[in-house]
Image (cartoon, rainbow, N blue to C red; front, side, top):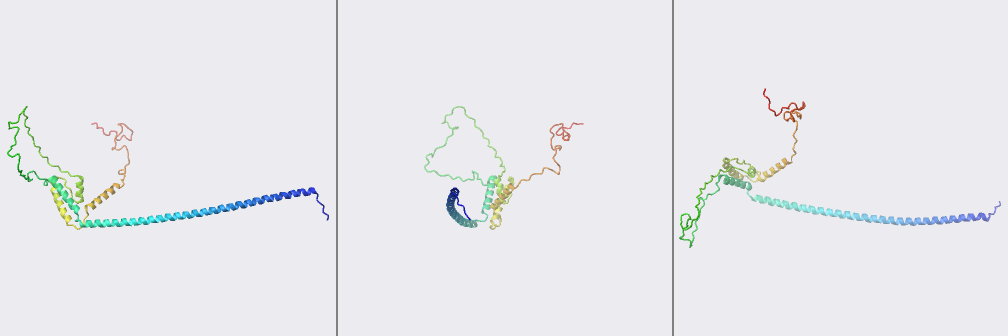
Length: 294
């Protein structure tokens, strides 16, 4: 076969095309190289991120470990302090029990009996008071008295004093009659009698009986062994607890319906608003008015 020889006009466009392709390849290679550099930089940044995350995780673990150690230390310290407080409380209770054991059983109750008996005796029976005639007056001898031989003088009978003006009339003072003592007891006295399980006196005639009962109660307390009878402190605590329970109890609302009857203004328990009214209030229209005699 015979090949035709290409002309120069046909060779020049093909050369331009090859040059453009090589230029395009060079541009593409540059882009690929730039892409690889960016990928390497991104990889480095990711490694830095991972390192920062690891360091942050390690720091968080150390912080949580420290917090757990602090909490454990606080818990150990709290348990030690609680144990110490419990030991001190037990030692205090033991010391208090030993002191109570040294005391006379029911000493407070017997002292309360003496106090109430003495109070009633002094206040209403006047046996504890001494009159002025019963008090022994001791005369004190005075040695070398400078006023020995002198005699007191009276303005009325002696002429030494000068009397001027009108003489005043002597006033006769009327001695007031002693009023009988009224019997009164305060609330504290009633409470104290209640602590002893005794009834307080309500009039003067019962005072002597109450004093005898108090003396007998004191003797009875002295014969009781320790812990066999409730003390005044135990009774006081029980009363306070009962009062608190009663105060905190909810108040029940009263039922307004009585015996199944419903509320109505026509009942005789309510006064009418006017003399004349509707048929509903006509039943008690004459409520509160005088009846006319027929």
